[in-house]
Image 1 (spheres, rainbow, N blue to C red):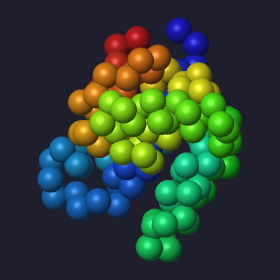
Image 2 (cartoon, rainbow, N blue to C red; image 1 turned 90 degrees about the horizontal axis):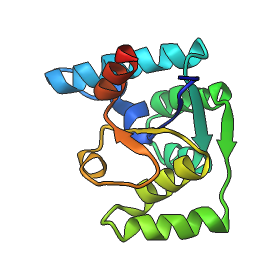
Image 3 (tube, rainbow, N blue to C red; image 1 turned 180 degrees about the vertical axis):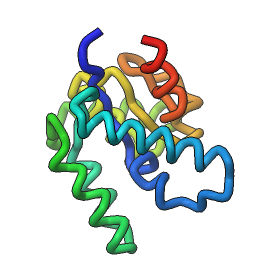
Image 4 (cartoon, rainbow, N blue to C red; image 1 turned 30 degrees about the vertical axis):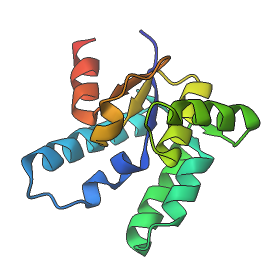
Length: 146
């Protein structure tokens, strides 16, 4: 297996800033930090998109917004908006997925990502063609088994 091409949604990037008292959140945070370390080491190839920029720009907390924005420089690829992505996003929304999430998924799929990493249960519970939608913990487990 080559270098996995991954896409982390904004929920994943925000997980370390969430209340860590809940065990599940703490475990997802640890998994996400492990994934970040592997991005830095080039073990995983990360895609960033215009949707990351858009959604992160709406974060009212400067420290969180700045910390997340720094990951753009670590991306191996940047996905820009296109009519193709917008059309695919509209199709994904028909599965009951919110517009921003649908556009993130469309960016990931169009960029050829193998994995869409999220902590959003509503997205995790949907079957999306052409990409594995996975929680950070399960992603780490899967990578450790390879």
